[in-house]
Length: 321
Image (cartoon, rainbow, N blue to C red; front, side, top):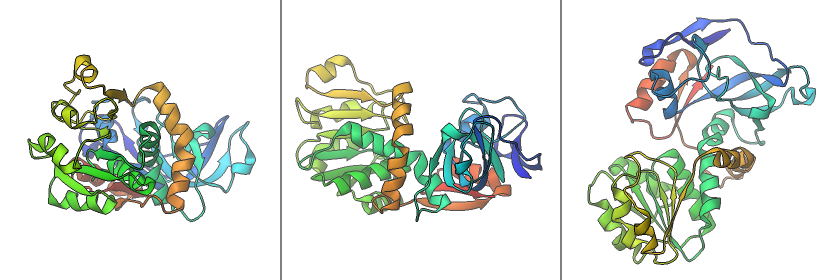
């Protein structure tokens, strides 16, 4: 079968199309015919060697896929054969291929009416967004700040908060084109986070104070809008560090009666796994709108990595074997 094999770490050119033996599902595994493989930014760091790979090289690359179960290994329910599922397997990988063997524990059924490309688009970022919204417990009368609402997670958070009926959504995006994406997702007003003064504009944009902030930028920016948070009740959910750890000391939160919750770690990952079915169901019901930026042929995996590293993507990139 055809697959994208990586023999060494490096630039996108290390992702090469090769013919490899078809995988055989082992005990507790299923064999998935891949119809769509997701391409995520963190995969570019794994390819480059910045983040460690969980399997030795050479290896078939990729960690997200959606498709149809064709066979099962020993001890695996044969009733799974023929089911459409999405698979997320960071321990083994191998999804940039026509077929992949993954643990049965790593698959989630795809609801009727949801394409494989859309399913792989929602599987990671959609489940993160849902978990964030559940943790934030935004109320109807509240004002919410969503950083990087033009991105996949921020965009889905914005969609979910709008569907939930919060009073006002202040979003950030980088530039005019991405501003339109945030508005389309449901934001009421969008600040340009490429403007160094954007944190000082939060209070005016909110028309008061912000009750709940979904923070993925971090760095020096978060501390600068703490006074725009609702005293005694403001909540900050930290799930990204695009500009590094927030420059906040405990006394900064204590003096204002605010809370900051870190959304990461083992317990957080368990929330994502258990909530994945619900995220896919919300997508199938139309509460979440898919954001597939572009579909590449399998042999163009290197080009897909170049595209995502250029920051030109306006949504999820998908490989179609």
